[in-house]
Length: 327
Figure: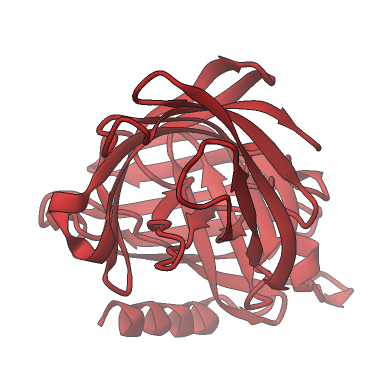
């Protein structure tokens, strides 16, 4: 139903807002690539009868899997944007509901458009329902933005995975013994999926095993691997602090909360600005087998630190800290 509403809204916008034109020069023939990069500006919002002006940053990129435009719009929170349609130089998009299990977000339907103006800036408008009490969810956003860079700031989005990257960690087991663990990315079978090997000197039942990660600028996923007993874990940049997010992959369940933004973490490899997450993994949805961990993740450098709150036994991982990396 919400998809139908978004499509209808996009068609309505196509009718109301025809192709952007320059006086005397005809149509502005903007392409998707003209929108990609980092933009900044001021956004005016109308919500709950109040007007607010917010400074924001908007990173727009081509989704590696679909070839369509996506974006991360950051003010006091981060919202993920996905393309609905690109028509006559105008980008029509929807704002993704990152908290779909929240009862106050069930009426979510928030979409808009962006187009170039005559002075080379981009104008945008969004309207629809966000989270809130029934009858008090309508929000309208509008503003202009100026491009500050043709590229994305690697520290402002997930950018740490590519073939050849490796990480070395010091592992402390629950019995206080220490050992080492290495991750090595070997290949990328698709544009947003990466495979590699983990190896350890901890005396565990395995010495080396396969892992798979998926990443786009707004989402990092540790893909489950039944053979290697790697559980699902999902991290996104549009999580709101303190909310609970549930993700499923087959029968595997991951419950994630963002605990803190931009925490400075010091490990043997150096100092890093990280987001701190709590992740509860439930293989096969079995809460009795759940593992609860804190993860400190740097957008640019990956997993910096992990602490397991309930290790299964005395030889299980209790603490993982980054000692070195090759990039």
